[in-house]
Amino acid sequence: MGKSYTIALLSQPREKNHMSNAKRYMTMSRLYAPTLKEDPAEAELASHKLLLRAGMIRKVAAGLYCYMPLAWRSIRKIEQICREEMDGIGAQEMMTPVLDPAELWHESGRYNNYGPELMRLNDRHDREFCLGPTHEETYTDLVKNELRSYKQLPVTLYHIQDKFRDELRPRFGLMRGREFIMKDAYSFDATQEGLQKSYDDEKGAYARFCERCGLKALPVVADSGQIGGDTSVEFMALADAGEAELVYCDDCGFAADTEAASAGIQLVEGEAGELQKLETPDCGTIADLAAFLGVPEAGCRKALALVDGEGTPTVVFVPGDHEMNDVKAEHAFGEYHLMTDEEIQEFGLVKGFIGPIGLPEGTRVCADVSLKDSQWWAIGANDAGYHYVHAQLGRDFQIGEWVDVISAQAGDACPHCGKPLASARGIEVGQVFQLGTKYSESMGATFMDEDGKEKPFLMGCYGIGISRTLAAVVEQHHDDQGIIWPVSVAPYEVEVIALDAKGEALDVAADVAQQLADSGVEVVLDDRKERPGVKFAEADLMGFPYQVIVGKRGIKNGTCELKVRATGEREDVSLAEVAELVSQQVVAQRA
Ligand code: ATP
Ligand code: MG
Image (cartoon, rainbow, N blue to C red):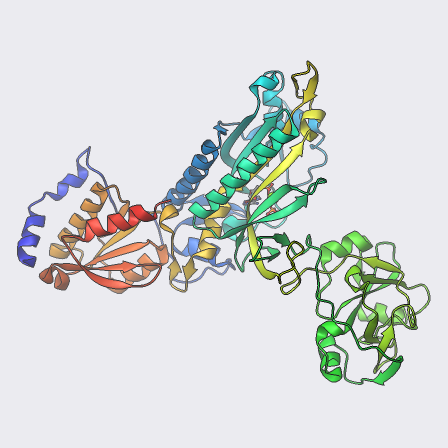
């Protein structure tokens, strides 16, 4: 049976592939995807390493990359998913120049405020321009004078284009580039309700975009509105490599940056009693003290010594199991720094044993607001080798100022539902933002409202990092062998591997590839003269979701091997049925 099948296959001319109206497949012998055997030294993140190793991207200069054929195919799919979601909510795609005249940025007042991230340049007439890092000015100016009446609203316009930001530290490959691809949308509404709807529609589209790209992402409130709702949300793809630290609630869906969340901490009280000074010679850390006292770390109080923005020596107390957050601390203390050992000595403090009783005069004494209701403290005694227990707030010591400085962390109570929060790191793939009238007012973009009055547009802006999304997908979908593309954004959906570079195995493999291509599946055929081990390794590195392996031995039985990249499962499948089987699975998984 195997034999007659083979003959039937061979009777089809392979040249079919080159006929003008035939569907085409790619071959590995032609594909421009030079792979690297070793991890490149410059790359830290998995996505950066794997995209380089799989021959998908190459660095041109810091933060500037070529997207080679495989990466570009995936990028186009990500763009297309994004486009479909934008079009689906009625947004209209258009295009703007990359080069932005400085006048527009002067009008909004941002030319001088934007800082060195803005790439500036002059033309031959010495007129100033910048390379657009974002396009509020361009769009506000575009609709000004031409979008005239409330009857024409709402309008949402968008483009997908390269953006430029001269990042201080371009790094992590596509994650933080200086030239990167962004979908950038702007909405124009007559009323706050209208803006809210445009904004909510975008949020819905962003959630669907992430899901269709195979990303597990959370909408994280970046900014709370005055009326309680959110006015900005960041979509964070969960990944250990993410730059943002998050807490989230599996129960009610709440998610926030650790610095934005006010921690609903589970306060653990010290013991009540008479103030007692204990000899604690080896207890220079909270962990030591907690072990010595036989209490949880949360039941101890941690002291941090810093010099605030005004130069005042400052001591701040936090729950023993929590950390001070840098961003919050800057809000509270200005441009502060933690004291060096020398400064601790100089200010008369005792490292490892700092407490609120008996501090040197002139010390600014602060504690995190979460401790406001904590009466009984176990805390340093400002004496080397001693701590106090049963120190009572109000009786034994006072706190000068209550500040909000700790990071939320896993186990803290969700501020919405009280359930314990989980923690994760996230990659910001997109952000939605209610701008209100900020740009329409400064640039004089108004419309005629129903009541006959000229009013500034209510605007929203909405960005998605298309190229960063590619990196985020790899962060979430890889193993030690390489990338594991979700079908929706895979550069090719299937690779057919011929175990021989000539003869029957190649012919049959080419035929399977052609059948798949004819049914609309995106296929690459590995037709190279390489050892099978090399072919398998590269197929796994490049991460094609399905691999069909065709060799002489299988052909004799009328079978080939089908490997699913995500699960590693391999099974023998009839050669006569493999194309249909794989194409069904692929189609079912396309987003
Ligand atoms: P980040 O905080 O990571 O610097 P951002 O908040 O400044 O980003 P936005 O102005 O919100 O970025 O831009 C919209 C989207 O563009 C971001 O959510 C992100 O996905 C993407 N993006 C921004 N900067 C870069 C960059 N340097 N490289 C790649 N993508 C970027
Ligand atoms: Mg952002």
